[in-house]
Length: 190
Image (cartoon, rainbow, N blue to C red; front, side, top):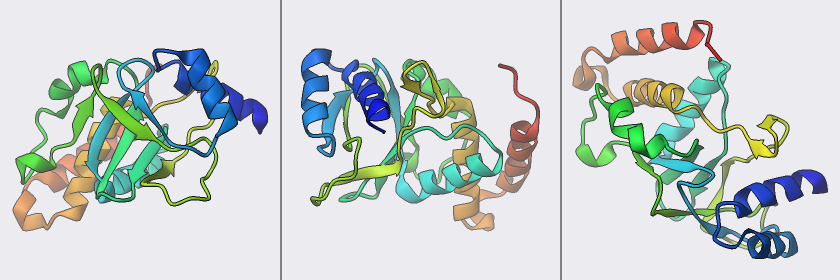
């Protein structure tokens, strides 16, 4: 387990201006949350926690990759770690999905932002952030954990939103959910 913690610590530390110093600090206090810049090793998609939880359930049902995600315990928000560069194309990815309220549209943060990440190991203290889905090197490319694919995430967020909202408010979303199921069940190109 220590090897996995070391590899994850190194991957997260690579997002900081001083990776060696960050790695040392995290290895000495693996349960302590860190504020990490986005846009280097990962971007984050922010949305209501219930929306992300349901989207993750849908991703699992379709046997899609489910990467690390963070739940902010003092807010109703969660963050999904996605590949760096996702924020640059997020507007195009989310286009075509209707949201009841503009403020409820999932947002993607990349370069110039930061997010609080829980420690690699569970904390014994009360902290305002915890893993909704912890990172793992078991499903990794090199030492980097696999991250949630943005296209599949958007599709599952749309389906989750349609399941959480009354049918009469969303209209044609049941057809969209059927289309999502068809696309996610189709063979994926790698």
